[in-house]
Image (cartoon, rainbow, N blue to C red; front, side, top):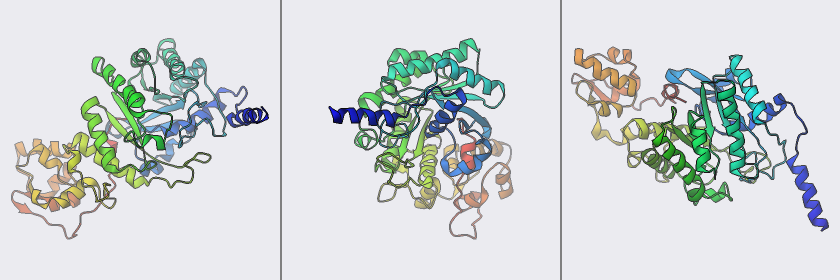
Length: 408
């Protein structure tokens, strides 16, 4: 009995509940922990976004044509009943636990929106007691934002694992985007991250449910998921094979890759962080799968089934396939042009349109259409003429521009 009382006292200390904090004190806590849901540029570019980090709960996502979209990104609550090994909100971790009421969170968001400090809302939550109860609280917030305050803008709503389909349909009527975090690349890896969750029966089922809703009533910004990278021992090949099947089977808008970062007072606090460069390479390979016509089998994996870190995947593929080059710019079709390092979707489209009117014979013409000539010149001919580079290996650039033309 004494041991049980000691355990109860310890649990009370660990939950560390704040008594009657004001809304801004809650926002400081719940905005901070919301950053673990990613929806913007890879972390390797995050240092360039510091101008948006005056408030940690204002998150710079990427909108159309590179425009920054400032999301009010917050949790409804961080008082979680789950105990995921990597998560800042796990129930056994000692840190402040706070919860917004739907009324105060909706009012707070509208204040920032009307003050022109944010452009949209990204709402998630830890699970208190049950997924349904927590999801209902989130939906009440969204309902107030939409109906009471007549907000017409962008909302991204997380669907919590185990949420009933009726609540998913309700969320779909209020949000522009729905998402479910799969977290792991396969069932065998999930116990290393979240021992109480079930990959197929819970997480994948939730993703199937929002995909089903999106097919019947297409969402403005579609559906997404997120994977934690580098904590469970998964390979890049396994991650991207899953992503490819998700794009094909469930018509996802995006898969987000979240580089693992160890958090104090969690079971994985001593595990090394995932390299931001690995996260970037996964995003670059993801572009090849979604938009450039590549299959997972074509991606240039190493013998350990990881992407090469020294070169972006498209460049690595080109160097491994010299028989596919050089490509004649005036004759190659759109998809052949997309395989050329330094030619993206926009520049390829411009090239196809331009050559209808005139022959392309100069590197300057390519440059004017957005081609990165110093990368492309080794892999192309212009009207039969080859323009070799003086450098043996093309320059590997991190390619931030690629992400700036994405939507959220």
